Amino acid sequence: MKNFILFTILAALLKAPLWAAVVPETILPVNTFAVATVPDLNKARQFFKADPAVRMWNDPAMAAFTGKIEKAFNKNVMQRIREEAPIQPGEIWNLAQGQVTIALTRKAGQTSPGIIFLMDSGNKAAELDRGMLQLREVLVDNQVEHERLRIEGTDFVHIPIPRRPGSGVYLGQSKSMLIVTSTEKLATTLVKNHKNPMAKTLKDNAAFVVQHKVQFDEAWMYGWLDFSTVLEVVNDEIEKRRDPDAKPDPLMPEPQRVMEALGLTGLKSVGVSGRTDEEGSLLEITLNVPEAARRGLFSMLAPPKKDARPPPFVSADVVSFGRLRQSAAQLWKTFVDTANEITPAAAGAMAFFQAQVQAKNPEFKLKAQLIDTMGDDFIMIEMAPRGKKIQNLLNPPRLYMINSKKPKVTLRAIMDLISMVVEAPPEEDEIEGRTLYSYHFGNFVDEKETTLHAVAVGEYVVFSQDLKAIKSYLDGPKEGAKPLAKLAGLNQAAKKVGGLDGGAFGFENSKIMARGLFTVLKKNPNLISDAFGGLPQGIDPDTGLPIEGDLFGEWLDFKLLPEFKQISKYLHYTVAGIRADKQGIRMRLFMPIPPASK
Image 1 (cartoon, rainbow, N blue to C red):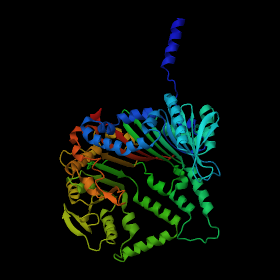
Image 2: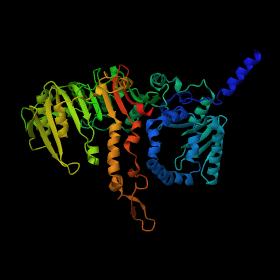
Image 3: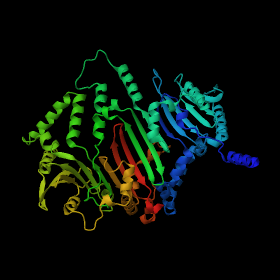
């Protein structure tokens, strides 16, 4: 029995890893105010390899196309780096086994932030040690000014920046961790933190701990910014540059007033994270601005909890859909209040603008006829491109819809605003008992004239540059058309971004978009080369003149793209949502794993 217990313990020890990963918050200083990290690069590599887009790139059907790009990249980029760099990029990439982190710190009275770079080599610490030795040899061989020093029993190299006394880079290795800092004191702090698990570090920063618990836990990458520290730096800089003898200028508002009006003083921190599981990948951006302090931009950005699901008339074959349930009257009030708080001149500018419109239509009243008649529903619908030209791809049919309590009054007010840009009256056409107005703006973008069509329908005012899109909407959904709201998996995906009742929701079908892109590129394989091929690609050493040539021909050959159906299984759709609560505003983007690729 005793031998069995000993054998079990020995087996467990043999299976246990020889290296335990160090997470960023246990080594970074407590005064860190910005951090961007991949806590475990090996785990991130696994997620990256399984990503549908990466799998599509590595699919045998794409080999001819991607192989050409990779060959050109190795020849024109990597080969030059290999010839000139003392340490090969591939070696550095292979050394990174744990965290890869960049961070900024701030100390009171410090004019510039402290900079930190960390890379954990894990069980490849011996290889990192050889790399550091090779670096020191290169510095000596190339007569680069440097200083070797011991910091807390750890070897470091200090490479000063020419003509900047007291500055430079400190590089050292603490166990498996590569440490690069901008000051010796930072290097000392990091080595101490690495050796002492009980040291006071970022894990003791209350704001970071809360953010980590609600957002960063299990994330394969994240970034965090303590915005209150940024405000301190900005305010300090403003005070340094303030001229005490300068006279107040109402047309030049005080920076502090601008920040307060926009709501920046209420923003505590920002968090960004990426998370992947068996259902898909989630990107999340959190703005920690409490409801009580929310104003200006953040007041306009935070939607109320209202139904933002796709209406029944939106079909499942759309390329993209977006819906925002914000009150137009509230948005306008916030905008006006913010502008007036920034500068008293804003009220005069708005009054002048209304007077200009009233010069053409004396009965025009911006607030009464436009703002107060608009509702709380804004919709955008994009359909698949109809043609196979690049113009069709760049300018697909889109519908823009604004909810209104009095659609005809709202439309007339918008037409009054358009009259400030277009002198000629609109063309009118009767379609399904409704008056369609068409404005011609000229050929601002290309040879094709830009036209805007507008019509009041039901509870909405509808705009589009595409007449067929307007007519299709007026005709109603095609018989048997599947509504977007009933698309397979949509409700489940929507839950990942806050649900369909958060006041804002977006959808994008990457498969339809990619199909159109493949069609255009295969039909026009020289599209990019023709557009940019005449740009100079270098300098002739003999004449000193630019050399014209095909910048992209060596890299891209769209004739090598496979048929779209060969790789369509890797493409699906993406959903997005914004949700506000008492603590802040969360913006999420979720990419479900394509069912056909599983």
